[in-house]
Structure formats: structure tokens, C-alpha cells
Image (cartoon, rainbow, N blue to C red; front, side):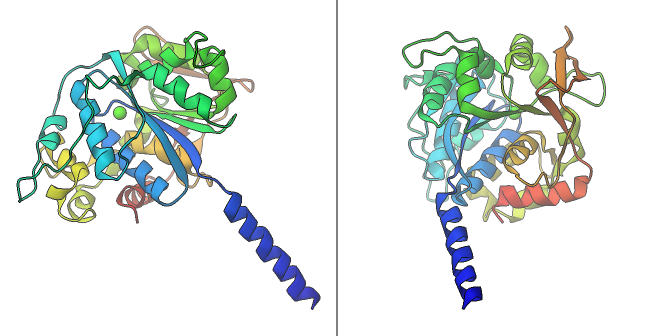
Length: 328
Ligand SMILES: [Ca+2]
């Protein structure tokens, strides 16, 4: 009798935990349209949201190309996220089309209908990136938001240096400190003294973020994504007809197939949302100095709040990341 009563209590406790466990609010900042890993990272986020683990609250784009907006909006609609809040860095870097935005936007099914059908673009009055971030942050509970940034840090730096306004009486640093649980960036190189692309593409922004970020900051350096490549076989086999999914269409246009691509942005998404630290290891805390050439110098400091990732088992990491992207 006593045993069954205890079992009943335990069941009730577990049920109430599962009921009260709310999805983690996530905001994704991306330079969609440069490298293909941003598209893979967004697919992961949709899968986490479908599994009830996160609520994707908004996407801010740091690449200054109008087709980036159309692509992100179209892919969101393809996945049933019709009104995803968006932000855009109107004065951001990298206006070029590059390789996969337009081919995916122009891709058609056999019946000649467009594969994705965005309704928003450069003239849709989308908020400047940092304003979108401020608006998204004020709506969320204190200390709850996981912010993931996988491009040059333009929008994040503009958030941190923003002044109080009619959105919030707090400046950017204080608003971030109040609302953001942790910031996860694909940025830097912590194995050799070589500058990383996101770091140097907006060098001033990188410096601002490493210096001003008031919450735990976890950086996935260039070397982590290089150690784990996304296999082209997954693109061809895991998403149905690869000509009928914007992710696989984009992947097949980014470079001539077949190719395996580095998993840079995926590593930040996974680490941000993995409570078990199952494939990446975080360094001791410290500070990061960004040199004039973009080199990121990490100095251990118990009072620092920056950590960087390493990947002890790249093969295991690859298998895990593929499952997350493919929704398995
Ligand atoms: Ca990126």
C-alpha cells in the first residue's frame, strides 16, 4: 500500500514536471546566404521546436542582401512558421547574392509552382536587427532567452550598444543581462592564431560583443566546425526528394555536388540546446581579446564569462548533428 502510494506521488511529480517544462525561448541571428551551414542550423532549430524543446521567437538577419529576407521568410513558411518575427541589418555587411539564395527562391516543383513562397522582402518594413532583438527580448521572462548568432556580430553588437528607447528603459547591455540566459556564437579561432571569417567580417562588432556581453558567452571557433563535416549522403537521402526541399535545393547549389561541408553553425546551435554536454566540451572561463587582424586571444580568468568549445569525438559529433538536422 505504502509502495503504491509512493509510486503515485512519483508519477504525479513527473507529470507535473513535464507539464511545467516550457520550451526554451530561442532567437537566431544568421547571415543566411553566405555559407550553407546557416540553412542546416535553421533546420535543426525547426526540429527542436517540433519536438517541443524550444520556441523559436524570431530570426534576425545580419547579411545585407534583400534575398536573405525572402529566403528566410520563404523557408519559415515552408515549415509552417508564417509570421516569424524578423529583423534585418540594413547597414550590415556582405550584400552579395552568392550561390544559393536565388536558385532556391526560383526553384519550382514539377507542376511549375514555386517551392517556397515568401511574402516579405526588403520593402516590407522589417525592423532593423537590433530593434527586432529589443522587441523580442522585452516580451520574454527574465534570464530565459537563448540567443544564437552564427554570422558576423553586427546585430548583436548594435543590440549591446543600443540606448534606452520606447521599447525598453534599459540600454542594450542591461536589457541583455536581464533577459538573456546565454549567448552562443560561431566566431573566433581558439586553436591557432588565425583570424576567423565571422570575426573579421565585422571586426568592430566582434570586439563589442566579446567586451560588452554581460551573460555567459560560448564561442564555437573555426576549428570545431572544421573537425566535423556534414555528409552529402544525408542531403541526398534524409529529406525525401532533394529537389523538393529548400534546404537540400540550397545545399546542392552552394557547391557542386557531392561535397561534405563543415558544420560551424550547427555546432553552436547544438551546444546551446544540449543540456547533457554530450558532444562538445566547454573550456574554463576567460576573456577574449580581438586583435587588429581579427585573431581571437583567449586568456583564462575565473571571473570571465566566455568559454570556447572543443570536440573530443568528431565522429560521434557528426552522427549526432546529422540526426538533429534530419529530425531523426
Ligand atoms: Ca553563418
